[in-house]
Length: 271
Image 1 (cartoon, rainbow, N blue to C red):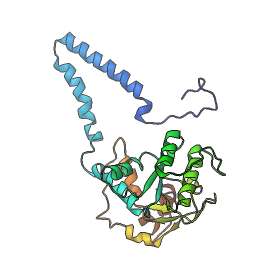
Image 2 (image 1 turned 90 degrees about the vertical axis):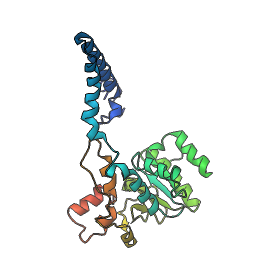
Image 3 (image 1 turned 180 degrees about the horizontal axis):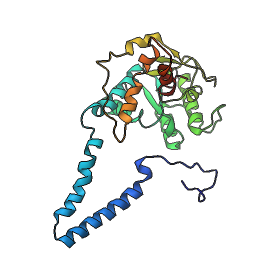
Image 4 (image 1 turned 60 degrees about the vertical axis):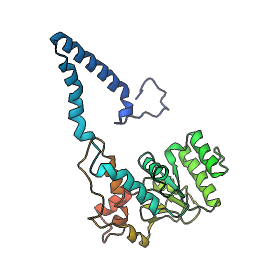
């Protein structure tokens, strides 16, 4: 986006997300509504304008309905899984929207595992967010202090938060959406303990594969009890997040090769 307009040093990002095309959606909606009204006036049939409004609603209903099936409970299942797997009083680093919003809901609305402090890496570049973490915890966070190996402000500030948390005696954990490179700046001695990665030592900056904790066996669900998945929809985020709950089973399965190993590395960020 913006080639020839924005400087070459500017990140050019095109993503298939609704908020990137919201102006186009608005423009189309205005033109469609104006056309439907004009057609209704010309034909003398007001129902034509009403039908034009109903057609998109009916056509998209099945693809957008999340009132039943896995979509209706996926966010809660994922939130409880990540929070329950975190050690007591842990600082749990999350990768972005999908593993942050469900946790906030579970904690603030259901009062579930309020001892865990979620920290969203993608929000850390915003001063207000980092300052709010410092205010709520009472930790001193020198936001501009350089961190060796950090290439982005989110990594640099996450490392500072992890350092302060460790000094306060709080365990460090991360969801599978946090990459191994990001984890290397938060701690070392990582192990997959249930649905979360947990650090056993200070950060070294070295990217090392996580060890699979045999105690994670207690987190593996029987296939019959595992959250079911639905047919892919326009936005398949529910299934994507539910597949993260397969990480303990994949890690401790009888065969760690082929597709299983690929799933661990790509989907679960084991390496």
